[in-house]
Image (cartoon, rainbow, N blue to C red):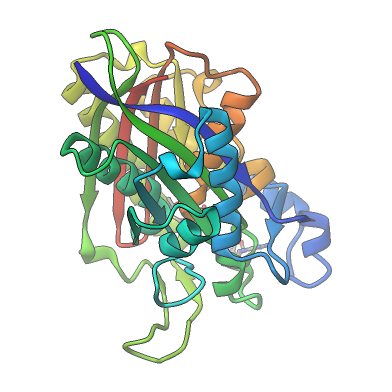
Length: 321
Ligand code: ACO
């Protein structure tokens, strides 16, 4: 049988790390408050010359190297981002040009924090339809550029970065590697709980992120537990067979609460929110790459990716590594 197989991953972070202690110099907050409410201890902030497309291209190069491929092998690039370098062209076309593999398919996906899940499911479908054989799926963000640094309820939560995976259509055995099931959802009724208050068609400005954190939290735990259950059912597997959950890294308490709801041990949850904070669409591939490179996720492991973000949008994807 044919499946889309994740054959390599990579990530990129800006050079500048910013600890909670450093933030307290400019924001009315404390290390204790941030750690206790979110689990975040550090984030990376892009400086001059570091943009969503440069981080994405760096992550893509690392993923290609891990997969043993060259840029010209890639026929499809999808970048999930809510913070593109420009309103257009799509960041994916800028990444394609930076890598030097012009000519294939390249476009962006906007589903905010669940953008990587949307991009992965889209790439899987396009590969299944024969539109390309090998794809780069990238989540890349510079959320520091859309934060209101006067709003302590949001600015301490986010960071910048990028993660990428190579997806290849391959012949595999029934119990072999590849994507087994994905589920995606959106509910536009809650667009006022997490949004950016600007844009080209309204204010002609970039705008700043606005969030009702407590309400987002409540929806996140319910929606994520539900979509994980649906995805396992679609794959015909029990939650107990999952080796690793790689969740969107928004808040340590959301990760713990979701795992508890599913009866999954916290030891099976990959956590990087302490180091990266919430990097929106980049958070799932960043966390996945960290767990592959430190040897936690091994070939044959059953891995669940999941995320929820503004819109609301949410989704999950189950694959064998
Ligand atoms: N430092 C110190 N105090 C703060 C800070 C801060 N940075 N921010 C808020 N406070 C204060 C508030 O002013 C409030 O004070 P008050 O009681 O005197 O009014 C108090 O802390 C409690 O504020 P709450 O907003 O009720 O705190 P809560 O426990 O809900 O935690 C948080 C806030 C961390 C934002 C939480 O609601 C959350 O994580 N929500 C999920 C949001 C999220 O992660 N979104 C990302 C995208 S969506 C997703 O990824 C799922």
